[in-house]
Length: 566
Ligand SMILES: [Zn+2]
Image (cartoon, rainbow, N blue to C red):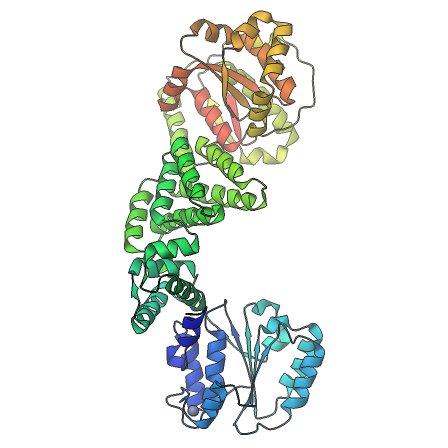
């Protein structure tokens, strides 16, 4: 079967066969029944929703000598001549190739003549937005004083490009995207008629990929039938579309939700190795989270999601494990990743980097989580059982003052975290080392991370030139992450001595200076043992400084102020 055979064979021939556009066809039928035809119509809507089919049916219906209930009979001499394109009174034009002033002038000269044998002379102008400005002006002159026998049917996918002067002279009908269920039903009917077995899941997948355009759906169906003329099955559709099985997409979504980097990376690898398009996969993943959002926020999931029952069930389960804020974050992050992947020379590596970053949760501002933490903080303050402050309590207000002076307008946005009972620990570690003022660049955590990894040997060399003992300690550590410009170095738990030594204020400051100067940005450093890191990630936040740090990390230093009251 040749390409588009199904689409042509099953093209609607009467208004009642135009699916999903009853709001248009009913009005047109009524106009024909009451003989109340306007001179110009505009059919707009996305491709494949039935604009041209409706225009052709309308052209026959207005001229049919034996119409039934507003539908053309398709059997009278006039209908037949229009159907086999021998009727001189129905003229189809494609504005994409006849868009000049001359084309429309020629048309203007011809419209004066009466129709040869039909009641109306009908001009169907497809993709009318492609007309040049001059051509639109010429068309306007005809529309201003149309001869009695003339009927214009304009069709366009981009009505916003049509001059208002033209629009105001047309009756406008917007053809909608066709509902998935209507598309599936039509494909079922067609499969039965052409004697091809089908799997309902497969038809639903086709419908989901046609975005409400019947023509697209039937083209895909046609390709499936050409490929396997016995049965339209799910696997064939997946292979033809280059799309990804929803179970795989669900698995990817849940590995993201579990924050499992390993699982996510393996899945991405599998998907890409099986030859699937990266952009398809991201598309599906974004739609998957979008559907979860629909489930969590609305009641009319059936209308808003084009998925099978199995998939709806899986989505419902998954969405119960995630908050609305988290879903929104995923959608935003994945959409950004998708956009950047399209521009990247190495989209795969970019995607993997983005996913890892997402899983570290660096960029997320999860309001629910933050609200919980603020409540936690309030409870600690109320209880009066406030842990003793560490270095950050001292450093924060002074840094905040600088920000405050620079950006006074932001003052109102600050969340003031008051603290009554913090005992200030006297600490000399920062005041001892006088650092020369220096203009640092403002780098991303990713850039800092890469700079340290790539320059590790040079950094160690520099540390050794200043303090050989310190270098011997630090070289046993490994950079694990950079979060809000704090580089975290991990030691194997057996190196207790090393960890303690590295964390001595003097050593820490020295190393911080080397790192900051190396990456040309003001970085903090932290040394932890591998075990401590695991405990830390499981342990709830306890001290005010921890919570302050988190708030600051989430909202930014400009918004959160750490304020002490005497
Ligand atoms: Zn007829």
